[in-house]
Amino acid sequence: MHWEGIRMVHTENRIDYISYCAGYVLAFTASRLGYVYLAGIVLMLEALLLYMMNLKRTGNLTDLRGLFSLSWVGGEGIACLQLSRLQSDWKTLTWVCFFLAYFCFISGYDIAARKSGKEAQQDRCGIEKNARQARQVLICVILLGVGSVFCFLLEAVVLGFIPLFSPEPHAYSYFHISGVHYFTVSCILIPALSVLYVRLTEKWTAFRFAVLAAGNLTAVGIPILCVSRFQLLFAVGFAAVVYLMLYRHVTWKMIVTAFIILIPVYVLLTVARRHDITYLNGIFEMKYDKMPIFITQPYIYVANNYENFNCMVAQLPEFSMGLRMLFPVFALTGLKFVFPQVTAFPLYTTKEELTTVTLFYDAYYDFGFIGIILLAFVLGCMAAWMTRWVENSRNPAAYLFYGQIAIYLGLSFFTTWFSNPTTWFWLAATFAMYVFIGYQVQGRSSK
Image (spheres, rainbow, N blue to C red):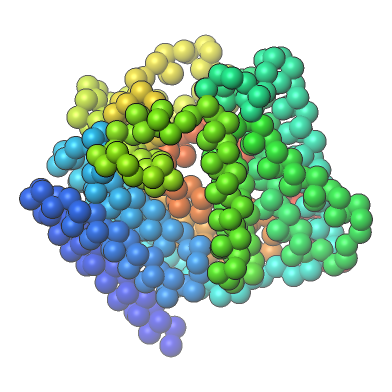
């Protein structure tokens, strides 16, 4: 039965490859012939099909391969629609790079999964009630909350303003003190920790409830005061992934409630940035001028990232040979002040205001399509290993790692997560919590 199961998984994987290659060739051909809507629809349907195949295989709504399929291939399909005047036909090399990104990711995932013996089936949660671990999670919530509030107040005093109350349209971009802002925004890890605590705790007290309430208010309040839509959405998305991993169910009522709450907050933060509809429509340059802003803004934040990648492919004079992806090392160690040239690389974009890029932007910037192949393959192997590790781990903080990786892969169209210093700072903070929460796990009673 064991080997029969492995053969079945490998057969399903081959179907993934065949379906993806066929869909991609069809989309490429349609785009070259000028049928951009057809190309976009084909890739969006292919992304949905690949996600559903992975969901059927694992039973996990947050399966890393499935999330990456939906995000990367689906985002590419959205970009193919060319609804903005900023968009143009992609270079053939751009198409090749986008194809290799997904193909090498699933290749790395399958090879790593095969090395582990079988495909991971995440159909249960290994976390049980544990009073000691619950207390340690609560301590992490307290430390993150107090640290974030202190650093936020420090930045507000030193810089002399709070973005939410500043008339400057780009005040949020200037609200940071080097080295301090990492701690300020780390409060966004608190909602996911709260989900862990609810799963672990055996009893509630007024103090514990108050700590969680204050921590989550901090996790929401600081992004609002910083006018950071991304940080707010990250906090909510991170907690949602951890919740789905632990409880394995979601209802339409939950989804509708989340949208009812988040959409008005998102709109209000957009207004707080002093970005009115006329200003945004002027930047987005949509072909259909009367399209509602709540459609054009999400669209351009997905589609234009692929356009920025195409700009780089067309304009990049030479590769940076690893310096772009090593930027977190220079930033977190302070070496960027000693070697300022590491921050001097130009950003190739369709428009100065639209600076978000894809997960693979820096990989190409460093080594061309070879960089795409290497990064995608490594990420695929990492995703398979992460899935197996979390499934077998007795430390609940392992879900915090999984949740962050799920967000990064699920937003692969958005930015270069793994050459972003903040990403590595959050992963380092998560590792510290992992060690603390897992301390004395073995050989001790869970009570």
